[in-house]
Length: 128
Image 1 (tube, one colour):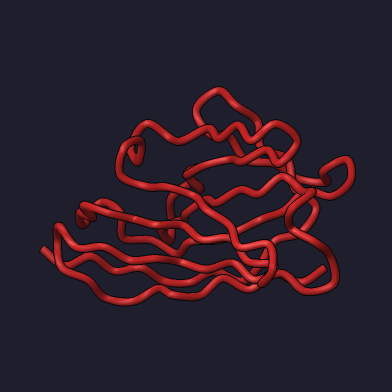
Image 2 (tube, rainbow, N blue to C red):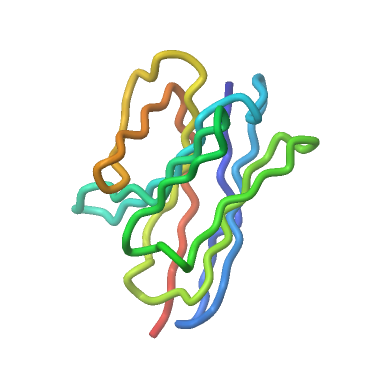
């Protein structure tokens, strides 16, 4: 399975972006999907973890109410809608998917989000 995140770019404070995570080699509609972000020199921060099994989504406190996940199964793609962006949202955003036991993980708050596959990130820059 290969994942590819895209849609990053430069946006002003208060603006919106929609990131995409396209999968090839495996269906996304049966997997756990997670997004995390990372700023160079800092630890990764879990953005959200979505469980296809029951539709539950865990959002990080810093993005709750502003970010939303959605998916388009026909395109085997999930989206991360990001609204009301601030400079603190500037980071490289990665999507990850779990199909098996999960060989790695990140935390979204206290929730552990395990994954087997990780895509290359996309850079989001929010200007003040």
